[in-house]
Image (cartoon, rainbow, N blue to C red):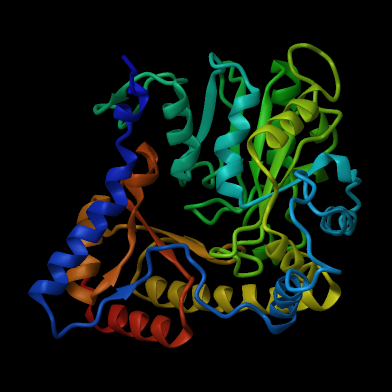
Length: 409
């Protein structure tokens, strides 16, 4: 008899967004005259810049002619795109060979798929709070125990608490971890790691023969040049870190789907053979994946041209201006607000010790504003909510006006 994977039954995080949807729907049915302002979802809203649209159209046009038609491409990604990504890193004096670059259909799939090159008994450490996909994919794979209601977390996972005391970036775990997930700028807190903080994790990983999986999807929102955009800006990082990146937020490609993963040839695992991890990921991709869309990759090439980079920066600046508007109003209300400066997310502490879901309800009922309860991102998220700065400017202005006029703190 065929059996189902029992690890799916351990999952509880899928409850978060359906529950938000249910509560918002109930509110709308009870208050049909009120407009709901959705500041909870991290999805882009503004049009893709024309120069990148031109690249996407070029990709479509190529498929319409026998002379330029392409079928299956290189599973690792179009060589031109990988060369552009290599140049993208070289701007920060990071030398990445194109054979270390693997183009994909987005960062999220790679975050889950990369686990296949690691042993099933690997010990996982995650920032807490954290983007749920790091945890959920390891639960499904079978690397964790059951969910512990008292601890609000899974048995077998090391939760590295990120809180006000440590500036929302924890030090490395005291115990041994095999795989460590880091995200900077962080989703949901909006915090950006410093050079010194990343160096501490690099030293830990080298000492413990661990691997860091570094999610850099929001790095193009960093405006402070004293902060690292890539983990490879830290000495020896290529010996112990895999970096995952995305076009989703920097070019508005959330629906287009395009990203990349860097697996350095210098990365050494327990077998001590440099290049083995790179070859395993290459084998995984060529076995399970036929490469990213030809059309999407043409858009990615355009996004990394000087003109494309300029337009992407303007797009990111638009969302950062949204974040500035939200932050100003919330702080004027006396709330503690973190992030929203070098990241499109704001991490907001509820007033008077209120819990995440209660703060969610308060914002919904008093202001018609939808956010994401922080507890959905992990145990340390309790008492906070995440605001997203992705949205049309006019909608953001309406939302902050409602908060300004109606929120009773």
